[in-house]
Length: 353
Length: 269
Image 1 (cartoon, each protein chain N blue to C red):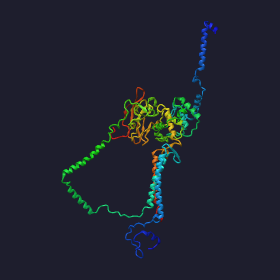
Image 2 (tube, helix red, strand yellow):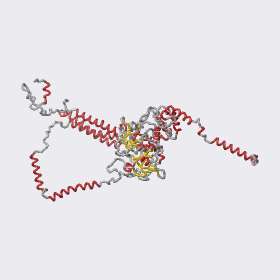
Image 3 (tube, helix red, strand yellow):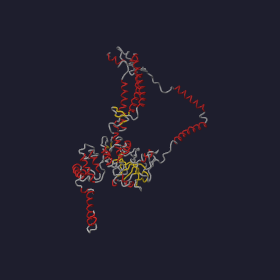
Protein backbone atom coordinates (compact mmCIF):
# COMPACT_ATOMS: atom_id res chain seq x y z
CA UNK A 1 0.00 0.00 0.00
CA UNK A 2 1.77 3.12 -1.10
CA UNK A 3 0.93 6.64 -0.06
CA UNK A 4 0.98 8.60 -3.24
CA UNK A 5 0.07 12.27 -3.56
CA UNK A 6 -2.74 11.56 -5.91
CA UNK A 7 -4.22 9.08 -3.47
CA UNK A 8 -4.45 11.76 -0.84
CA UNK A 9 -6.14 14.17 -3.25
CA UNK A 10 -8.80 11.68 -4.24
CA UNK A 11 -9.50 10.63 -0.67
CA UNK A 12 -10.05 14.21 0.45
CA UNK A 13 -13.79 13.82 0.82
CA UNK A 14 -13.96 10.14 1.66
CA UNK A 15 -14.73 9.19 5.30
CA UNK A 16 -12.69 6.80 7.45
CA UNK A 17 -9.43 7.44 5.61
CA UNK A 18 -7.59 9.08 8.48
CA UNK A 19 -7.74 5.96 10.66
CA UNK A 20 -6.53 3.73 7.85
CA UNK A 21 -2.92 4.71 7.85
CA UNK A 22 0.25 2.85 8.66
CA UNK A 23 0.72 -0.86 8.54
CA UNK A 24 -2.92 -1.72 9.33
CA UNK A 25 -4.88 -2.91 6.33
CA UNK A 26 -7.23 -0.21 5.05
CA UNK A 27 -10.58 -1.84 5.75
CA UNK A 28 -13.46 0.59 5.33
CA UNK A 29 -16.30 0.02 7.71
CA UNK A 30 -18.83 1.37 5.18
CA UNK A 31 -17.54 1.96 1.65
CA UNK A 32 -20.83 3.62 0.63
CA UNK A 33 -21.11 6.08 3.49
CA UNK A 34 -22.52 9.53 2.75
CA UNK A 35 -19.52 11.69 1.90
CA UNK A 36 -21.39 14.79 3.16
CA UNK A 37 -21.26 18.21 1.58
CA UNK A 38 -18.06 19.72 0.28
CA UNK A 39 -16.90 22.72 2.30
CA UNK A 40 -18.81 25.91 1.54
CA UNK A 41 -17.12 28.26 -0.86
CA UNK A 42 -17.67 31.96 -0.63
CA UNK A 43 -18.57 34.32 -3.41
CA UNK A 44 -16.64 37.52 -3.92
CA UNK A 45 -19.72 39.42 -2.75
CA UNK A 46 -19.68 37.49 0.57
CA UNK A 47 -16.10 38.50 1.27
CA UNK A 48 -15.76 41.90 -0.35
CA UNK A 49 -18.31 44.53 0.67
CA UNK A 50 -17.33 46.75 -2.29
CA UNK A 51 -18.13 43.95 -4.66
CA UNK A 52 -21.47 43.40 -2.93
CA UNK A 53 -22.26 47.11 -3.32
CA UNK A 54 -21.39 46.82 -7.00
CA UNK A 55 -23.85 43.91 -7.45
CA UNK A 56 -26.49 45.85 -5.59
CA UNK A 57 -26.04 48.75 -7.98
CA UNK A 58 -26.35 46.43 -10.98
CA UNK A 59 -29.59 44.91 -9.65
CA UNK A 60 -31.01 48.34 -8.83
CA UNK A 61 -29.91 49.56 -12.26
CA UNK A 62 -31.76 46.70 -13.98
CA UNK A 63 -34.91 47.42 -11.99
CA UNK A 64 -34.60 51.10 -12.92
CA UNK A 65 -34.19 50.09 -16.58
CA UNK A 66 -37.42 48.13 -16.24
CA UNK A 67 -39.18 51.23 -14.87
CA UNK A 68 -37.87 53.28 -17.79
CA UNK A 69 -39.11 50.55 -20.15
CA UNK A 70 -42.61 50.79 -18.73
CA UNK A 71 -42.59 54.58 -18.96
CA UNK A 72 -41.31 54.34 -22.55
CA UNK A 73 -44.08 51.80 -23.31
CA UNK A 74 -46.73 54.27 -22.19
CA UNK A 75 -44.99 57.10 -24.05
CA UNK A 76 -44.84 55.05 -27.30
CA UNK A 77 -48.49 54.12 -26.94
CA UNK A 78 -49.37 57.80 -26.74
CA UNK A 79 -46.93 59.06 -29.36
CA UNK A 80 -47.22 56.63 -32.29
CA UNK A 81 -50.21 56.65 -34.56
CA UNK A 82 -51.59 53.21 -35.38
CA UNK A 83 -51.06 53.87 -39.11
CA UNK A 84 -47.40 54.86 -38.82
CA UNK A 85 -44.97 52.49 -40.53
CA UNK A 86 -41.19 52.66 -40.29
CA UNK A 87 -38.41 50.75 -42.03
CA UNK A 88 -36.33 48.64 -39.64
CA UNK A 89 -33.51 46.69 -41.24
CA UNK A 90 -34.09 42.95 -41.03
CA UNK A 91 -37.86 43.21 -40.66
CA UNK A 92 -38.86 45.63 -43.43
CA UNK A 93 -41.74 48.07 -43.18
CA UNK A 94 -43.24 47.44 -39.75
CA UNK A 95 -45.82 49.20 -37.64
CA UNK A 96 -44.01 51.73 -35.43
CA UNK A 97 -46.55 51.18 -32.66
CA UNK A 98 -46.27 47.39 -32.58
CA UNK A 99 -42.50 47.43 -32.80
CA UNK A 100 -41.95 50.05 -30.08
CA UNK A 101 -44.49 48.46 -27.72
CA UNK A 102 -42.84 45.08 -28.09
CA UNK A 103 -39.36 46.49 -27.60
CA UNK A 104 -40.18 48.59 -24.51
CA UNK A 105 -42.28 45.87 -22.88
CA UNK A 106 -39.48 43.36 -23.35
CA UNK A 107 -37.03 45.82 -21.72
CA UNK A 108 -39.47 46.26 -18.80
CA UNK A 109 -39.95 42.51 -18.29
CA UNK A 110 -36.32 41.52 -18.92
CA UNK A 111 -35.15 44.22 -16.45
CA UNK A 112 -37.15 42.60 -13.65
CA UNK A 113 -36.16 39.07 -14.66
CA UNK A 114 -32.44 39.60 -15.21
CA UNK A 115 -32.22 41.81 -12.09
CA UNK A 116 -33.86 39.16 -9.92
CA UNK A 117 -31.63 36.40 -11.27
CA UNK A 118 -28.54 38.51 -10.64
CA UNK A 119 -29.77 39.36 -7.12
CA UNK A 120 -30.36 35.71 -6.28
CA UNK A 121 -27.02 34.59 -7.65
CA UNK A 122 -24.76 37.24 -6.16
CA UNK A 123 -26.35 38.61 -3.00
CA UNK A 124 -28.95 36.26 -1.56
CA UNK A 125 -27.62 33.59 0.81
CA UNK A 126 -26.21 30.56 -0.98
CA UNK A 127 -25.37 28.45 2.11
CA UNK A 128 -25.95 24.77 1.40
CA UNK A 129 -28.59 23.37 3.73
CA UNK A 130 -29.34 19.70 4.33
CA UNK A 131 -32.91 18.92 5.28
CA UNK A 132 -33.33 15.20 6.00
CA UNK A 133 -36.41 13.56 4.58
CA UNK A 134 -38.59 12.01 7.32
CA UNK A 135 -41.10 9.17 7.21
CA UNK A 136 -44.27 9.97 5.33
CA UNK A 137 -46.60 7.86 7.51
CA UNK A 138 -47.63 8.71 11.07
CA UNK A 139 -46.44 6.51 13.94
CA UNK A 140 -48.65 3.76 15.37
CA UNK A 141 -49.55 5.68 18.53
CA UNK A 142 -50.94 8.65 16.60
CA UNK A 143 -52.88 6.38 14.29
CA UNK A 144 -54.46 4.48 17.17
CA UNK A 145 -55.32 7.80 18.81
CA UNK A 146 -57.10 9.10 15.70
CA UNK A 147 -58.96 5.81 15.28
CA UNK A 148 -60.27 5.99 18.83
CA UNK A 149 -61.37 9.58 18.34
CA UNK A 150 -63.26 8.60 15.16
CA UNK A 151 -65.04 5.71 16.91
CA UNK A 152 -65.99 7.90 19.83
CA UNK A 153 -67.27 10.65 17.52
CA UNK A 154 -69.35 8.22 15.50
CA UNK A 155 -70.86 6.76 18.67
CA UNK A 156 -71.65 10.16 20.16
CA UNK A 157 -73.25 11.50 16.97
CA UNK A 158 -75.67 8.58 16.96
CA UNK A 159 -75.18 8.14 13.19
CA UNK A 160 -75.49 4.37 13.45
CA UNK A 161 -78.43 4.42 15.88
CA UNK A 162 -80.66 7.20 14.52
CA UNK A 163 -81.58 5.69 11.19
CA UNK A 164 -84.09 8.41 10.22
CA UNK A 165 -81.38 11.05 10.30
CA UNK A 166 -79.01 8.84 8.39
CA UNK A 167 -81.51 8.07 5.62
CA UNK A 168 -82.64 11.65 5.17
CA UNK A 169 -79.00 12.83 5.02
CA UNK A 170 -78.30 10.31 2.27
CA UNK A 171 -81.39 11.57 0.42
CA UNK A 172 -80.37 15.22 0.75
CA UNK A 173 -76.84 14.55 -0.48
CA UNK A 174 -78.16 12.56 -3.41
CA UNK A 175 -80.56 15.31 -4.48
CA UNK A 176 -78.21 18.32 -4.25
CA UNK A 177 -76.37 17.58 -7.59
CA UNK A 178 -79.72 17.72 -9.41
CA UNK A 179 -79.71 21.52 -9.05
CA UNK A 180 -76.48 21.78 -11.07
CA UNK A 181 -77.83 19.41 -13.72
CA UNK A 182 -80.95 21.57 -14.10
CA UNK A 183 -79.02 24.82 -14.32
CA UNK A 184 -76.40 23.46 -16.75
CA UNK A 185 -79.09 21.91 -18.91
CA UNK A 186 -80.59 25.39 -19.31
CA UNK A 187 -77.38 27.01 -20.65
CA UNK A 188 -78.68 27.09 -24.19
CA UNK A 189 -81.16 25.56 -26.58
CA UNK A 190 -80.46 22.09 -27.89
CA UNK A 191 -79.16 22.05 -31.48
CA UNK A 192 -82.28 20.08 -32.48
CA UNK A 193 -81.89 19.20 -36.17
CA UNK A 194 -79.93 22.32 -37.17
CA UNK A 195 -76.88 20.13 -37.87
CA UNK A 196 -78.81 18.24 -40.52
CA UNK A 197 -80.34 21.23 -42.31
CA UNK A 198 -79.05 24.37 -43.98
CA UNK A 199 -80.60 27.52 -45.45
CA UNK A 200 -80.98 25.82 -48.85
CA UNK A 201 -84.52 24.90 -49.77
CA UNK A 202 -86.55 24.39 -52.92
CA UNK A 203 -86.49 27.47 -55.15
CA UNK A 204 -83.66 29.36 -53.42
CA UNK A 205 -81.54 31.15 -56.05
CA UNK A 206 -77.78 30.50 -56.11
CA UNK A 207 -75.96 33.79 -55.49
CA UNK A 208 -72.42 34.30 -56.84
CA UNK A 209 -70.29 35.26 -53.81
CA UNK A 210 -68.09 37.52 -55.98
CA UNK A 211 -70.84 39.70 -57.37
CA UNK A 212 -73.81 39.02 -55.07
CA UNK A 213 -75.85 38.42 -58.22
CA UNK A 214 -77.83 35.34 -59.25
CA UNK A 215 -75.98 32.86 -61.45
CA UNK A 216 -77.20 31.75 -64.83
CA UNK A 217 -76.19 28.42 -66.38
CA UNK A 218 -74.48 30.17 -69.31
CA UNK A 219 -72.24 32.11 -66.85
CA UNK A 220 -70.61 28.92 -65.62
CA UNK A 221 -67.97 27.76 -68.09
CA UNK A 222 -66.52 24.24 -68.19
CA UNK A 223 -63.46 24.16 -65.97
CA UNK A 224 -64.46 27.21 -63.97
CA UNK A 225 -64.90 27.42 -60.21
CA UNK A 226 -67.44 29.69 -58.54
CA UNK A 227 -68.42 30.06 -54.91
CA UNK A 228 -72.05 30.53 -54.03
CA UNK A 229 -74.40 31.16 -51.16
CA UNK A 230 -78.19 30.99 -50.77
CA UNK A 231 -80.38 33.90 -51.77
CA UNK A 232 -81.37 36.18 -48.88
CA UNK A 233 -78.24 35.64 -46.79
CA UNK A 234 -76.50 38.90 -46.03
CA UNK A 235 -73.28 39.63 -44.18
CA UNK A 236 -75.25 42.02 -41.97
CA UNK A 237 -77.36 39.14 -40.63
CA UNK A 238 -76.80 38.27 -37.00
CA UNK A 239 -76.41 34.57 -37.77
CA UNK A 240 -74.46 35.07 -41.03
CA UNK A 241 -71.39 33.14 -39.84
CA UNK A 242 -73.51 30.25 -38.52
CA UNK A 243 -75.43 30.00 -41.77
CA UNK A 244 -72.61 30.47 -44.29
CA UNK A 245 -70.56 27.90 -42.38
CA UNK A 246 -73.14 25.32 -43.38
CA UNK A 247 -74.48 26.59 -46.69
CA UNK A 248 -71.34 27.68 -48.61
CA UNK A 249 -71.15 25.85 -51.94
CA UNK A 250 -68.77 25.50 -54.86
CA UNK A 251 -70.21 25.48 -58.35
CA UNK A 252 -68.28 23.72 -61.10
CA UNK A 253 -69.12 22.63 -64.61
CA UNK A 254 -67.89 19.37 -66.05
CA UNK A 255 -68.42 17.99 -69.51
CA UNK A 256 -71.60 15.91 -69.09
CA UNK A 257 -69.81 12.84 -70.50
CA UNK A 258 -67.15 13.13 -67.76
CA UNK A 259 -69.68 12.63 -64.95
CA UNK A 260 -69.57 8.98 -63.95
CA UNK A 261 -72.20 9.00 -61.19
CA UNK A 262 -75.75 8.93 -62.53
CA UNK A 263 -77.34 10.65 -59.54
CA UNK A 264 -74.70 13.40 -59.68
CA UNK A 265 -75.58 14.07 -63.31
CA UNK A 266 -79.32 14.03 -62.53
CA UNK A 267 -78.89 16.46 -59.64
CA UNK A 268 -76.88 18.87 -61.78
CA UNK A 269 -77.88 20.98 -64.76
CA UNK A 270 -76.17 20.36 -68.11
CA UNK A 271 -72.93 19.40 -66.34
CA UNK A 272 -73.14 22.13 -63.70
CA UNK A 273 -72.85 20.46 -60.30
CA UNK A 274 -72.98 22.09 -56.88
CA UNK A 275 -71.27 20.63 -53.82
CA UNK A 276 -70.87 21.69 -50.20
CA UNK A 277 -67.63 23.61 -49.57
CA UNK A 278 -67.31 22.09 -46.08
CA UNK A 279 -65.05 19.04 -45.73
CA UNK A 280 -66.76 16.02 -44.19
CA UNK A 281 -63.72 15.27 -42.04
CA UNK A 282 -63.52 18.19 -39.58
CA UNK A 283 -65.27 20.94 -41.52
CA UNK A 284 -62.47 22.89 -43.19
CA UNK A 285 -63.47 25.00 -46.20
CA UNK A 286 -62.38 22.79 -49.07
CA UNK A 287 -61.82 24.19 -52.51
CA UNK A 288 -58.42 23.23 -53.91
CA UNK A 289 -60.03 22.25 -57.18
CA UNK A 290 -57.98 20.71 -59.98
CA UNK A 291 -60.06 21.26 -63.07
CA UNK A 292 -58.35 18.64 -65.26
CA UNK A 293 -58.61 15.77 -62.77
CA UNK A 294 -61.88 17.03 -61.17
CA UNK A 295 -60.32 16.41 -57.76
CA UNK A 296 -60.97 18.63 -54.78
CA UNK A 297 -58.34 18.63 -52.08
CA UNK A 298 -58.79 19.70 -48.46
CA UNK A 299 -55.94 21.92 -47.24
CA UNK A 300 -56.17 20.67 -43.65
CA UNK A 301 -55.66 16.90 -43.88
CA UNK A 302 -55.44 16.26 -47.65
CA UNK A 303 -58.79 14.48 -47.99
CA UNK A 304 -59.40 14.27 -51.73
CA UNK A 305 -62.81 14.04 -53.38
CA UNK A 306 -63.59 13.15 -56.98
CA UNK A 307 -66.19 15.62 -58.24
CA UNK A 308 -66.80 13.57 -61.38
CA UNK A 309 -67.92 10.57 -59.31
CA UNK A 310 -70.37 11.90 -56.74
CA UNK A 311 -67.58 13.59 -54.74
CA UNK A 312 -66.41 10.15 -53.60
CA UNK A 313 -63.50 10.18 -51.10
CA UNK A 314 -60.42 8.93 -52.96
CA UNK A 315 -57.80 9.82 -50.37
CA UNK A 316 -57.48 11.03 -46.82
CA UNK A 317 -59.35 10.80 -43.55
CA UNK A 318 -62.78 12.07 -44.65
CA UNK A 319 -65.53 9.51 -44.06
CA UNK A 320 -68.31 10.70 -46.36
CA UNK A 321 -68.57 12.14 -49.86
CA UNK A 322 -69.25 15.87 -50.10
CA UNK A 323 -73.01 16.54 -49.93
CA UNK A 324 -74.45 17.57 -53.30
CA UNK A 325 -77.07 20.28 -53.80
CA UNK A 326 -79.73 19.42 -56.34
CA UNK A 327 -80.17 22.29 -58.79
CA UNK A 328 -82.38 23.39 -61.64
CA UNK A 329 -83.26 26.56 -63.53
CA UNK A 330 -86.20 28.82 -62.63
CA UNK A 331 -88.48 30.85 -64.90
CA UNK A 332 -86.02 33.78 -64.90
CA UNK A 333 -83.24 31.51 -66.18
CA UNK A 334 -81.32 31.56 -62.88
CA UNK A 335 -79.83 28.53 -61.14
CA UNK A 336 -81.93 27.49 -58.15
CA UNK A 337 -81.71 24.81 -55.49
CA UNK A 338 -84.30 22.06 -55.67
CA UNK A 339 -84.02 21.23 -51.98
CA UNK A 340 -81.48 20.92 -49.20
CA UNK A 341 -78.20 18.98 -49.43
CA UNK A 342 -78.28 15.24 -50.04
CA UNK A 343 -76.87 14.62 -46.54
CA UNK A 344 -75.84 16.74 -43.53
CA UNK A 345 -72.84 18.97 -44.33
CA UNK A 346 -69.55 18.87 -42.50
CA UNK A 347 -68.12 16.34 -40.08
CA UNK A 348 -70.05 13.36 -38.76
CA UNK A 349 -71.85 13.48 -35.40
CA UNK A 350 -73.56 10.85 -33.26
CA UNK A 351 -77.09 11.27 -34.53
CA UNK A 352 -76.00 11.66 -38.17
CA UNK A 353 -78.42 9.66 -40.30
CA UNK B 1 -81.63 76.08 -115.29
CA UNK B 2 -84.42 77.36 -117.46
CA UNK B 3 -83.20 75.17 -120.32
CA UNK B 4 -83.18 72.09 -118.10
CA UNK B 5 -86.56 72.91 -116.72
CA UNK B 6 -87.95 73.33 -120.26
CA UNK B 7 -86.85 69.84 -121.26
CA UNK B 8 -88.27 68.06 -118.30
CA UNK B 9 -91.06 66.59 -120.33
CA UNK B 10 -88.75 65.28 -123.04
CA UNK B 11 -89.35 61.52 -123.72
CA UNK B 12 -85.78 60.68 -122.64
CA UNK B 13 -85.85 62.79 -119.47
CA UNK B 14 -86.93 59.89 -117.24
CA UNK B 15 -84.13 57.72 -118.60
CA UNK B 16 -81.52 60.41 -117.95
CA UNK B 17 -82.75 60.90 -114.35
CA UNK B 18 -82.68 57.18 -113.79
CA UNK B 19 -79.11 56.95 -115.05
CA UNK B 20 -78.01 59.80 -112.80
CA UNK B 21 -79.68 58.21 -109.79
CA UNK B 22 -78.09 54.83 -110.41
CA UNK B 23 -74.65 56.43 -110.87
CA UNK B 24 -75.03 58.43 -107.66
CA UNK B 25 -76.14 55.36 -105.62
CA UNK B 26 -73.31 53.22 -106.94
CA UNK B 27 -70.73 55.93 -106.44
CA UNK B 28 -71.88 56.63 -102.88
CA UNK B 29 -71.89 52.92 -102.06
CA UNK B 30 -68.41 52.46 -103.42
CA UNK B 31 -67.18 55.43 -101.42
CA UNK B 32 -68.90 54.75 -98.09
CA UNK B 33 -69.47 50.99 -97.78
CA UNK B 34 -67.07 49.12 -95.36
CA UNK B 35 -64.50 47.00 -97.09
CA UNK B 36 -65.62 43.36 -96.95
CA UNK B 37 -63.40 41.22 -94.71
CA UNK B 38 -63.19 38.36 -97.12
CA UNK B 39 -61.24 40.50 -99.53
CA UNK B 40 -58.70 41.78 -96.98
CA UNK B 41 -56.18 39.06 -97.72
CA UNK B 42 -53.21 41.29 -97.29
CA UNK B 43 -54.37 42.92 -94.01
CA UNK B 44 -52.14 42.89 -90.93
CA UNK B 45 -54.45 40.46 -89.12
CA UNK B 46 -54.31 37.92 -91.90
CA UNK B 47 -50.54 38.21 -92.13
CA UNK B 48 -50.28 37.66 -88.38
CA UNK B 49 -52.38 34.51 -88.65
CA UNK B 50 -50.18 33.16 -91.45
CA UNK B 51 -47.02 34.02 -89.56
CA UNK B 52 -48.51 32.51 -86.40
CA UNK B 53 -49.40 29.28 -88.19
CA UNK B 54 -45.80 29.03 -89.35
CA UNK B 55 -44.48 29.52 -85.78
CA UNK B 56 -47.15 27.11 -84.49
CA UNK B 57 -46.15 24.33 -86.85
CA UNK B 58 -42.53 24.64 -85.66
CA UNK B 59 -43.02 25.00 -81.91
CA UNK B 60 -46.42 23.60 -80.97
CA UNK B 61 -47.77 21.20 -83.61
CA UNK B 62 -45.81 18.16 -82.34
CA UNK B 63 -48.12 17.85 -79.34
CA UNK B 64 -51.16 19.94 -80.22
CA UNK B 65 -51.60 18.64 -83.78
CA UNK B 66 -51.06 20.30 -87.16
CA UNK B 67 -54.31 22.25 -86.89
CA UNK B 68 -54.57 22.67 -83.13
CA UNK B 69 -56.92 19.72 -82.83
CA UNK B 70 -54.83 18.17 -80.04
CA UNK B 71 -53.24 14.73 -79.71
CA UNK B 72 -52.46 12.19 -77.02
CA UNK B 73 -49.63 14.47 -75.92
CA UNK B 74 -51.47 17.78 -75.73
CA UNK B 75 -55.01 19.16 -75.50
CA UNK B 76 -56.97 20.71 -78.35
CA UNK B 77 -56.39 24.45 -78.71
CA UNK B 78 -59.66 25.18 -80.51
CA UNK B 79 -61.48 27.84 -78.50
CA UNK B 80 -58.79 28.45 -75.87
CA UNK B 81 -58.43 32.02 -77.14
CA UNK B 82 -55.46 34.34 -77.54
CA UNK B 83 -55.28 35.01 -73.76
CA UNK B 84 -54.33 31.37 -73.11
CA UNK B 85 -51.53 31.55 -75.73
CA UNK B 86 -50.20 34.82 -74.34
CA UNK B 87 -50.13 33.32 -70.82
CA UNK B 88 -48.65 29.93 -71.69
CA UNK B 89 -46.00 31.16 -74.12
CA UNK B 90 -45.41 34.50 -72.39
CA UNK B 91 -44.53 32.81 -69.09
CA UNK B 92 -42.37 30.22 -70.88
CA UNK B 93 -44.59 27.29 -69.86
CA UNK B 94 -45.18 26.46 -73.52
CA UNK B 95 -43.57 24.98 -75.52
CA UNK B 96 -43.14 22.41 -72.76
CA UNK B 97 -39.71 20.97 -72.15
CA UNK B 98 -41.07 17.55 -71.15
CA UNK B 99 -44.41 16.08 -70.12
CA UNK B 100 -45.05 15.77 -66.39
CA UNK B 101 -47.45 16.39 -63.55
CA UNK B 102 -47.20 20.10 -64.18
CA UNK B 103 -45.39 22.20 -66.78
CA UNK B 104 -43.28 24.71 -64.85
CA UNK B 105 -42.56 28.28 -65.78
CA UNK B 106 -39.23 28.87 -67.56
CA UNK B 107 -37.38 31.40 -69.70
CA UNK B 108 -39.53 32.69 -72.55
CA UNK B 109 -37.83 32.37 -75.92
CA UNK B 110 -40.42 34.18 -78.08
CA UNK B 111 -40.71 37.92 -78.61
CA UNK B 112 -44.05 39.56 -77.77
CA UNK B 113 -44.61 40.07 -81.52
CA UNK B 114 -44.22 36.34 -82.21
CA UNK B 115 -46.49 35.47 -79.26
CA UNK B 116 -49.13 37.80 -80.67
CA UNK B 117 -48.87 36.07 -84.06
CA UNK B 118 -49.32 32.59 -82.56
CA UNK B 119 -52.18 33.99 -80.45
CA UNK B 120 -53.82 35.39 -83.58
CA UNK B 121 -53.59 32.00 -85.27
CA UNK B 122 -55.05 30.12 -82.25
CA UNK B 123 -57.80 32.74 -81.88
CA UNK B 124 -58.73 32.16 -85.52
CA UNK B 125 -59.45 28.47 -84.75
CA UNK B 126 -62.40 29.25 -82.50
CA UNK B 127 -63.76 31.99 -80.22
CA UNK B 128 -62.14 32.24 -76.78
CA UNK B 129 -60.94 34.83 -74.27
CA UNK B 130 -58.71 37.43 -75.92
CA UNK B 131 -55.59 39.10 -74.56
CA UNK B 132 -56.70 41.79 -72.07
CA UNK B 133 -55.88 45.41 -72.68
CA UNK B 134 -53.77 47.43 -70.28
CA UNK B 135 -56.84 49.26 -68.98
CA UNK B 136 -58.47 45.94 -68.09
CA UNK B 137 -55.68 44.50 -65.97
CA UNK B 138 -54.19 47.71 -64.63
CA UNK B 139 -54.47 47.82 -60.81
CA UNK B 140 -54.73 51.63 -60.89
CA UNK B 141 -57.82 52.83 -59.07
CA UNK B 142 -58.92 49.34 -58.02
CA UNK B 143 -60.29 48.50 -54.57
CA UNK B 144 -57.41 46.80 -52.73
CA UNK B 145 -59.47 45.74 -49.69
CA UNK B 146 -62.16 44.21 -51.88
CA UNK B 147 -59.41 42.51 -53.87
CA UNK B 148 -58.05 40.99 -50.67
CA UNK B 149 -61.48 39.66 -49.77
CA UNK B 150 -61.95 38.19 -53.26
CA UNK B 151 -58.46 36.72 -53.23
CA UNK B 152 -59.05 35.00 -49.90
CA UNK B 153 -62.38 33.62 -51.13
CA UNK B 154 -61.34 32.45 -54.59
CA UNK B 155 -57.58 32.02 -54.72
CA UNK B 156 -56.00 31.63 -51.27
CA UNK B 157 -56.96 27.98 -50.86
CA UNK B 158 -54.23 27.07 -53.35
CA UNK B 159 -52.03 30.16 -53.70
CA UNK B 160 -51.74 31.05 -49.94
CA UNK B 161 -53.17 34.24 -48.42
CA UNK B 162 -50.53 36.51 -49.96
CA UNK B 163 -49.91 34.45 -53.12
CA UNK B 164 -46.89 32.45 -51.98
CA UNK B 165 -48.21 29.29 -53.66
CA UNK B 166 -48.62 25.83 -52.24
CA UNK B 167 -48.62 22.08 -52.89
CA UNK B 168 -51.37 20.10 -54.62
CA UNK B 169 -51.69 16.39 -55.35
CA UNK B 170 -49.26 14.11 -57.20
CA UNK B 171 -46.48 16.64 -57.72
CA UNK B 172 -48.76 19.42 -58.89
CA UNK B 173 -48.48 22.78 -57.19
CA UNK B 174 -49.95 26.27 -57.19
CA UNK B 175 -47.06 28.56 -58.17
CA UNK B 176 -46.03 31.66 -56.28
CA UNK B 177 -47.57 34.85 -57.65
CA UNK B 178 -44.61 37.02 -56.66
CA UNK B 179 -43.41 39.19 -59.47
CA UNK B 180 -45.85 37.79 -62.03
CA UNK B 181 -46.89 40.29 -64.72
CA UNK B 182 -50.43 41.61 -63.96
CA UNK B 183 -51.38 40.72 -67.54
CA UNK B 184 -50.44 37.09 -66.95
CA UNK B 185 -52.36 36.98 -63.64
CA UNK B 186 -55.40 38.33 -65.46
CA UNK B 187 -55.06 35.80 -68.27
CA UNK B 188 -54.61 32.93 -65.81
CA UNK B 189 -57.88 33.86 -64.09
CA UNK B 190 -59.60 34.14 -67.46
CA UNK B 191 -58.37 30.91 -68.98
CA UNK B 192 -57.54 28.55 -66.10
CA UNK B 193 -54.17 27.16 -67.23
CA UNK B 194 -53.39 23.48 -66.55
CA UNK B 195 -55.21 22.36 -63.37
CA UNK B 196 -56.23 25.82 -62.22
CA UNK B 197 -59.97 26.39 -62.60
CA UNK B 198 -60.93 29.40 -64.70
CA UNK B 199 -62.70 32.45 -63.32
CA UNK B 200 -64.42 33.82 -66.43
CA UNK B 201 -65.76 37.36 -66.69
CA UNK B 202 -69.30 36.02 -66.29
CA UNK B 203 -68.64 34.91 -62.71
CA UNK B 204 -65.71 37.21 -61.85
CA UNK B 205 -66.13 40.48 -63.75
CA UNK B 206 -63.19 42.46 -65.12
CA UNK B 207 -63.17 45.05 -62.30
CA UNK B 208 -63.00 42.38 -59.60
CA UNK B 209 -60.03 40.79 -61.39
CA UNK B 210 -58.32 44.20 -61.32
CA UNK B 211 -59.09 44.40 -57.57
CA UNK B 212 -57.34 41.07 -57.03
CA UNK B 213 -54.32 42.23 -59.05
CA UNK B 214 -54.20 45.42 -56.97
CA UNK B 215 -54.28 43.37 -53.75
CA UNK B 216 -51.39 41.18 -54.95
CA UNK B 217 -49.44 44.29 -55.92
CA UNK B 218 -50.04 45.68 -52.41
CA UNK B 219 -48.85 42.62 -50.47
CA UNK B 220 -46.08 41.59 -52.84
CA UNK B 221 -43.44 44.31 -52.96
CA UNK B 222 -40.37 45.32 -51.00
CA UNK B 223 -42.35 48.25 -49.56
CA UNK B 224 -45.31 46.12 -48.45
CA UNK B 225 -46.45 47.13 -45.00
CA UNK B 226 -46.12 44.40 -42.44
CA UNK B 227 -47.63 45.20 -39.05
CA UNK B 228 -46.24 42.11 -37.35
CA UNK B 229 -42.57 42.51 -38.23
CA UNK B 230 -40.83 39.28 -39.19
CA UNK B 231 -42.89 37.60 -41.94
CA UNK B 232 -40.98 34.27 -41.93
CA UNK B 233 -41.97 33.95 -45.57
CA UNK B 234 -45.68 34.64 -44.85
CA UNK B 235 -46.24 30.91 -45.06
CA UNK B 236 -48.62 30.72 -42.12
CA UNK B 237 -48.64 28.99 -38.76
CA UNK B 238 -46.26 26.10 -39.55
CA UNK B 239 -43.01 28.08 -39.98
CA UNK B 240 -44.12 30.50 -37.27
CA UNK B 241 -44.62 27.69 -34.77
CA UNK B 242 -41.42 26.01 -35.88
CA UNK B 243 -39.50 29.25 -35.40
CA UNK B 244 -40.98 29.82 -31.94
CA UNK B 245 -40.23 26.25 -30.82
CA UNK B 246 -36.76 25.96 -32.30
CA UNK B 247 -35.34 29.44 -31.86
CA UNK B 248 -37.51 30.86 -29.05
CA UNK B 249 -37.30 27.81 -26.82
CA UNK B 250 -33.71 27.15 -27.92
CA UNK B 251 -32.64 30.63 -26.85
CA UNK B 252 -34.31 30.21 -23.44
CA UNK B 253 -32.63 26.85 -22.93
CA UNK B 254 -29.30 28.32 -23.99
CA UNK B 255 -29.65 31.16 -21.47
CA UNK B 256 -30.57 28.71 -18.70
CA UNK B 257 -27.56 26.50 -19.46
CA UNK B 258 -25.22 29.48 -19.70
CA UNK B 259 -26.48 30.85 -16.39
CA UNK B 260 -26.07 27.54 -14.58
CA UNK B 261 -22.64 26.86 -16.09
CA UNK B 262 -21.18 30.10 -14.78
CA UNK B 263 -20.29 29.94 -11.11
CA UNK B 264 -20.48 33.01 -8.89
CA UNK B 265 -17.94 31.59 -6.46
CA UNK B 266 -14.82 33.63 -5.73
CA UNK B 267 -12.58 30.60 -6.22
CA UNK B 268 -13.10 29.40 -9.75
CA UNK B 269 -12.89 25.63 -9.86
